Amino acid sequence: MYDIAIIGAGVIGGMTARTLAKYNLKICILEKENDVAMGATKANSAIVHAGFDAKEGSLKAKLNVAGSKMMPEVCKELGVKYRNNGSLVLGFDEEDRNTLLELVERGIKNGVEGVRLIEQEELHTLEPNVSEHATCALLAPTGAICCPYELTIAAIGNAMDNGAELKCNFKVTQIQETEGGYKIYSEGNTEEGCITARFIINCAGLYTDQIAALVGDTSFQVHPRRGEYILLDKECGNLVSHTLFRTPSKMGKGILVSPTVDGNLLLGPTSVDMVDKENKNTTEEGFADIISKARENIGNVPLGKTITSFCGLRAVGSTGDFILTSPQKGFINAAGVESPGLSASPAIALYIVEMLQAQGLTLEENPDYNPLRAPMHGFREASIEEKNRIIRENPAYGKIICRCETVTEGEILDAIRNNPKAPDLDGVKRRTRAQMGRCQGGFCGPYITELLANEWNIPYEAVTKCGGTSFINIGKTKEGAKE
Image (cartoon, rainbow, N blue to C red):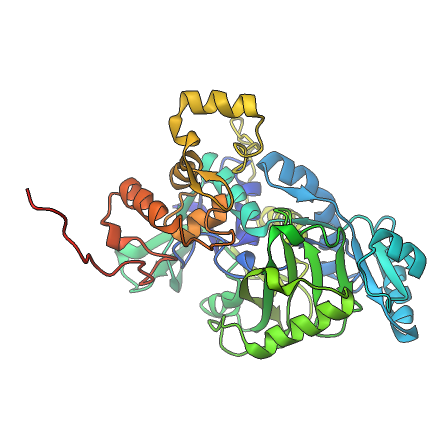
């Protein structure tokens, strides 16, 4: 029997697993997809919010500010890229100015350091490319950016390196109470696809309400809110230095323009409430909205440098706040964790640990716990001398596979071999950035497919893009020369 079963391998599940791995506990992470970070975690704005937006006194406000303060150290320990670039919320008229003044006051009450209103001259000094029609802005110097899926992969990898287990393709369909815990069944409800655990932490994102209902908890609902994005080439990454927001509305923080930690420029997201929890299609209307709003923020958006677009679904809870509840002993919900969920994730993990302690979980520190993890991007950031030393020891690092992002065979093999092991092409992409450049995998994809087939000892045709039936190849056109 496991001590803890965490349902959902997104950023909340990952950070919670890593925090609990500090103790002598038997932990299992259950994920219905082929890999970790496959839900809202892999498709969001990548912003570490300062904490001025959430209503004072709410869990969102409290945990956002606490998590934001923790994030630099967490990212440093996990080898994850983090950039304290600051945030600007743009105002264009007196109504916006009044709203921004309210947000400044709220930010001060929430404990956000340095938040203030700046006028047009200072705004355009900080960001020369901002629209000349912007008259003022809220400046939050503690705002930052990181890579959400990189953070999640590193957190889960660190938890696994410290003893936690990960079971992917484990879709939870039934939960039964037993003496001293729970039996958790995967699709098919067979004993072979079943684990037992003393405690369950429900971090299933869009499906937290459905998981909660398996133990009779129908106290909340979760619906998806679609957010579409446009990603521009790295040569556009210096167009702005801060993350630029519009004055927020009840539907969210509006269309942003932000650099990424990898040097690209991100535009989006849209904000459309949905019913279908699997519909991640991008739309013509969504792109038109992004383009229109982005051009209002900065006058000359180089849309000709677009390299990809994508859509994410936020898990919007019915209460308006994070839902961190325990409907019965041994079962904890971490639901409705939309923005600022990424920012709050380290603090949410601590909050959950406190809930477990209150329910009688004994926490004995693991003397062998190691909080550190080598960065997934260490080779490309090494000095020439260090790279040459690594290549002499392992020639695979001297072979460039992804030309756009200069990713080597050695880095790709590390991604497939290290916890959590990349199972498919998208898994390699999230760990190494191979396939994320201008050609979007057009050149390096076949080589990465071959490496995956060899490492997993499966046929070339069995390699998938993202699990399931997303096969890259359906068969051979030539069998090769006969002997």
